[in-house]
Amino acid sequence: MILEFSITNTYSIKEKQTISFEATGDSANDETHFIDYGGKQFLKLACLYGANASGKTKMAEAFDYYVAIMIESFARLQPTENMHFIPFMFDVETQNEPGEFEVIFYAEDFEKKIGIIRYEYKLKLNKTSVLEESLFYSPKGQRKLIFDRKKGLPVKWGTDVTGAKKIIESMTRDNCSLVSAGAQARHPIFFFIYNHFKNRYIGLLNFSKHSYSTYIAQRMEEDSDLKNKVISLLSFSDFGNISEIKIKKEEMPDTFLARYPLEIQREIVMRGERPVNRKISFVHHYETDYELPFFLESAGTQRIMDLAVPLIEITQKPNVCFIDELESSLHQELLEMFIQLFLECSSDSQMLFTTHNQELLDSGLLRDDEIWFCNRAGDGSSKYSSISDYTGIRKEVSRKKLYKADKFGALPNIDINALRGLLCAEKN
Image (cartoon, rainbow, N blue to C red; front, top):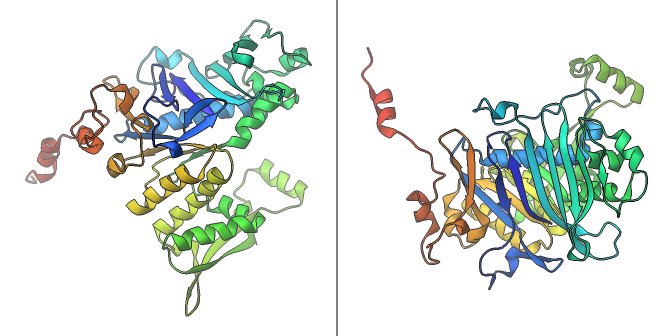
């Protein structure tokens, strides 16, 4: 369970910025918004507003990047590969400075003797190397070191760490985290941390950049119960009388495979299995059945199916999910339905989403400490703050009106007169 995470000098973020899931307001009558975990209350939601190009998505992308480095860099990166790190580029100094990531989370004691405890992980890196990395935990409330790594120095190990420490240290390359190397060695501490994030963090869902239909088709093909739930969710959400989802598998033709690099083609030949393309179609029942290919369905139907699997996953088991522009192609009622179902039906899950939808501010679905705003500073960097950071905000005042009145910033600064002069000027 994530309490908070912080990002420094990464993408549009220059100075250290923190998103917190710690409740700061009154919890009365808000049971669905909280998770009682290890004797502490965590918020389920964080909703991030901001103008276009302000950096609201970059916070989620940065978290996604650092978690991938934390748990998968040993396996994902080649020994000489760079770390694909992008610092804040609008400053000549930060271009050559490292980025930093910190996350405080609560999870079981890795030895499963105590219960839920606090962990603190920190990572500092540049384009080629991990410069610093550390992990602390707090069994019985006392903060203790698991390891502390600094480039060029021996790893400092905590007294509670036993096992093949020297082997893990020798396996840890400059361009990978010690956690990911330790997980590869199946050391119980690092294998536990790896599994915790691998099993709980669904990832960043960015529907404007990626299509998840192939992944969803594969999941439904493997799990008939999941497919039935998706069909029911679509029908109950008023997307027509959908009675079936058909998935057809086709082997990719030689002409398509020829576009792959030669090393991938050789690997396909060695495996003896050709890649498979899955095509989805919906069966609509109106007196008789009509089959419609997925690409001919409305944008809203496609979007709700994209969201159906993560909604089912975060309500059925503990997960953390980040979604970019949740409201895209959704009617207001469907958007609110998604959030309401998540709040009411999930037990140990958390969700962060970005949005432009101002109606949510007065919908009653969001608490002040769940609403965050991203502002673009004068130097081009992103700054993040919550409504709960502001003083003198009365409960009865419309949050939407305050936002539109620029109380919280995070609005586009549009020069309508200059644009009018540009577009309405008489042609020469």
